[in-house]
Image (cartoon, rainbow, N blue to C red):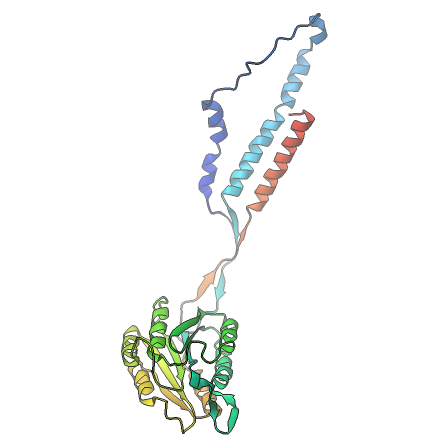
Length: 314
């Protein structure tokens, strides 16, 4: 259907008539008298006067149509299409990935050419690809936590941003508490009862302003469920499993330990089986702007008037 964004613009329709009525008429004080020898040389019949007067009236009609077209363009006409339903049956899911210096170490001793971050990016990217209907966001943390991607349905962009991440991009330390705090802040902008954070790290909290236990306590109050994943082989001593497990328990999530790539894949497969929350269906109506049509017609009318002035017809 047709819709005008600024319909009040049509209230200006009588403006030219009001200006003509209120403003004084222009006078020509420099008019010179014309003296002729014989008045018969300038006599014209009444019919020619009437036809000439009618001929001069057509520019007025063009002016009126031009003014109407300009006001129509100013009113911003739009064509609104039929409602289209958006796929929004999933949940809001944020992923927090550790980029500290230890993520450059081999995932396990048997595969030294694959470090922890490369394995994480490969498995997590496949996980994101399957989250059809979910809004997915990405947080990268090291010395501090940074929002790499807000919650979005554009899973392709999130995967690209994850693939471009490198070790030490956010610093060499590990700010687990800050990562949780940033996720809480970003989720506060979205009213959703089913909010999930998946936090992956290979170490312990060594930086940041927020302690992990305090961040977990605040997340529990906000209704944010946190799943924590600790990665590294069995000889890893830096992984603080006790803290990661406490974070998960405090928020109603679970803690997982991945000793190798296969276990990491199984963990993400398990996370992929979480029940999606039911959301109200969202719709939108495609809108096409049409202001250029009346504006183009107004330009045509202006060109006609300019040509008529040049030819002496108006």
